[in-house]
Each structure stands twice: as structure tokens, then as C-alpha cells.
Length: 160
Image (cartoon, rainbow, N blue to C red; front, side, top):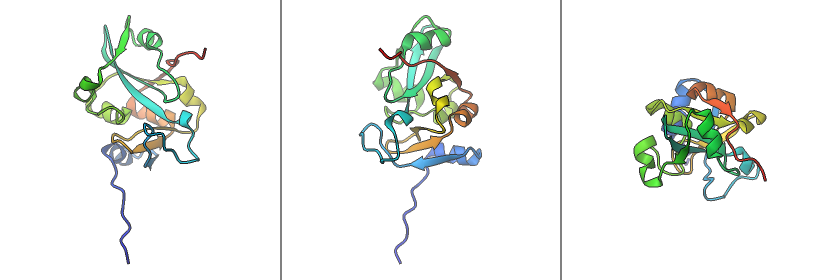
């Protein structure tokens, strides 16, 4: 009888499981564009690391179908302006490579302020990276926000 290969949980999934935060591990790579039919692209949220002129690193989480409004994030985070952290400095700053940034892992290592776009409140669950490329978690946005001490705010660019 063939052994069933068990997918190893990422550190993020282990942290959430230990803390008894309900979530579901998914094997998807949102950057590649290959998604199961039951997943809408707008349900997937990207975790962006920026640097503020007053506060230092700030994390913004928006749907992958949207753009982050840097002016809105700057204002809500107490900065005059914020800018994306260059990819070459990303791993040094957050501990994760481009495409693997996630609020759970970042909160465990650093106490950067985290802001989740209000649109997440309109969904039952959102999908964020689980800390490794090709691994994601589906989680209730409020549960995630409580766990990582995030604030909900209007931080995506307005539709034109």
C-alpha cells in the first residue's frame, strides 16, 4: 500500500495551529496565476512591506487585483510618505522573499504596524501567503487581524 504523502506545514501554519487559529492550508501560487476554480483572484491578498519616513517599516495587505494607495497608508500610519521596500532588501527586512511575505510570520519576528484593507471585511475568508512560495492559507480576516494585531483601513487605490 502506497504511503500518502503528507504536505509539510509551513512555519506560519504551525504557528496558527499551535495558537488554535482556524485556517486552511492551500497549495497555490498566486504569482503564477494557476488557481483552482473555486478561488476568486480578488479573494487572494498580497502582503506588502513599505518603509515610512517617520515610523520605519509598515505592512499593507490588499487584494492582488488592486493597488496599494501609498498616500492612504502613509496618512493612516502616521507618515508623510511611504515607499515600497526594494526587493533586494525585502528578505533582510521581513525575513521573507518576494511572494512569500505574510502577516503571521512578520508579526512573530517584528512588531511592524500591519494594515489590512477594509475589503477583507466583506469576505468570509481571505487567502494570504503561508511564508513559502506555492503555499497559502485561507483564514477569516478578523481572526487574522486579531492574531497579528492588524488594523482594518481603506488602503487600496480608488477605482477610476
